[in-house]
Length: 435
Image: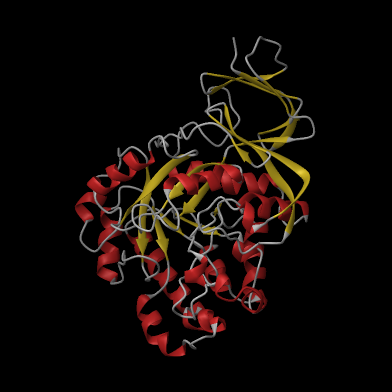
């Protein structure tokens, strides 16, 4: 007997929507087509689209350390509430995840506490190159995270020779927070106390492109894979589109949805993140990259902070905003607006992450693959409200904004974890496996 049949929906298969049923047995996709076998459960997906389980490749769940702001349990609840079936989580915790011991601790903390599937980044430091060389078979490790410019936490590798050492020894994709620490320090004098509009002046375009050029040069020299996170400038788009191959890059939904100065006028320090939200000329170029398939992933950079901290006077206010719960509604709304196609979105949140990071058995609706699905209603309108945010931080930059198109069910290993915004069942997410 089958465990589940999803009937009457449109399945996203090979870039097309097809009216096919999908069956599940023992957590795997068992059959695709017209299915009439006996089953324990049927989901009627009439009027809905069945997508492969969507992956958010950049989240900060703050555990261990700032668990008053977020933890692995609450962050994973936010993920499944937003139709995300798996997350990559970042190492800038306290203590940082930059040793095998701390990595194992994080896996232990995640077990039976996370609703979605998960993988963790291993943090690069100036002196842990021996460990970085030996991550190939580390279960649940998606890659190496390198902070070339300081942001939240104390993982910083700023000197060029140390960055070289990280790449030289890397045994996985190196994902980079690309800002130039030297320029950040020189520019500190441009910070205007109490004026968050000076955030993109301090963390300038020059600061971003200078760092990204350096990273690409080093990665190409050692023939290693680099994934540039949260790209924000037109200069980087033009540069990175000339350097594909081993170099891939991400854009966040925030940078594709809001821009300066309006975002700072309206949201104040709630719009503050690193690298910053910039003016419309950059926003337009980011969209140019999306439309032309230059960029490779969309990650939320979910980086929650409590309101009491976000409301401090700039620059004492921390950078970062939550986003794992809103990534899909925001991007599906852009699909409805004709800014990108559904298949482009699926490339960015399912297929490309699989290719870049080598995740096994995910990202496609294929027989034998894991039964992770994001079921969406492209016609349903939702209003994002702080009251419905699952993250412990309890707010969203999109509070009060209406979006058309939203996930209505999250299914992981064939089990329904979210239905119409309600979280169901127990936290039994699993670590991702990699080639």
